[in-house]
Length: 490
Ligand code: BG6
Image 1: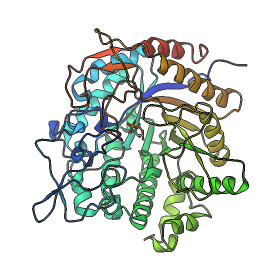
Image 2: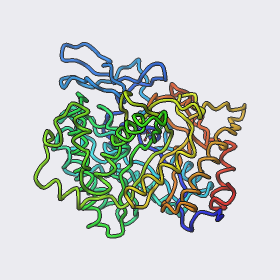
Image 3: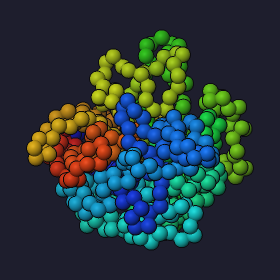
């Protein structure tokens, strides 16, 4: 068996600005939705801090994932006694040179990062972009070029300027599409010559609540309307991007936690097929450029009459078709199981007796990646890009902050071997793999630091205390060797 990955395979890592960058309100950056989210834990969900018109402060029962009921009249506020992890994150804003050097020493060929929309357009509505914001990312690109690392830019990673959320109800409003396209155009004009790979949205199929989409009342209709508007925003950006940058390659990113039938009972198998369509609704529409035949059934499941109940303009079908993805990007963290009668979900799901779990309850399933890669490629027939994967673990540093993370090495060894099999044996074309996240950063779901993914330890705790010192873990040396041998050493 061929053990090396194909020549030119892009090895790298991935981060998101509000979990990694910090620099809140520095360099002219405006506030973004995640800036109003407190820290949390597995037991205590993160909350948005909002002020009601009568003056009461509410922590709506809204974590980033739920956000079902943020009243339209509520105003986000920052409370002095709360810790908001995005404000500092792990301060890439001031550590980018050091961090990119560490990535370069690992042998990274690609680095996926998101641009903070509110650093470029502080309220989302300005006529001109914030030059200082553009300059920051110019410096980041300069560093990457110095080490021959390709950028992979996520235009919108689960956030937007808070103003667009508050004023327009986020992506529930068609108006926000034009602000997104203006923002994307600015990025293409400014960075287009230096960037080939783009992602329009992160985990778009998760259609999370307020923090990610700006939608206040995240009921079925609003969420699927937001998704439609995001499809159109993405397709318009892709059309424009292709015109402005003929060599550009566009993807959107899907959370593909695959799902197996709980038993071989035909009812469970059929129910799982239907459940999986919840995700195919997104992958098919963006990957093939039209809504799948089962779109109405998906919407009906969420209490919506069907596509006819969404605000879809006559030109939208053409836009979708002309703005198809060039490649399918996805995150893969876990798999789950499903049986007839279970509640549908986009991300998450049930246990599997054959699999171990992370301390956060995520099933550890390396073979599931090979299964997922085959399933997606068989379906869409476009190259894949695995742009997020990793295992969140509790690390125990010694006095010198060194972590002997054998569990991470074990996980990645199995996972990357499964990926290699999908590529070399099953012949699934795959552009690259960007591990989440090469340097420890803030968890999206819980806001914690203790859920660590990196090859590089960052000295910071859940409340932002620490020196921010970066220290390579045992897995750093290991992955460096895997990359050097282009996968042969797995
Ligand atoms: C994906 C997101 O859902 O999973 C990332 O794109 C996130 O932003 C990652 O960090 C891991 O999730 P968590 O909750 O462990 O940070």
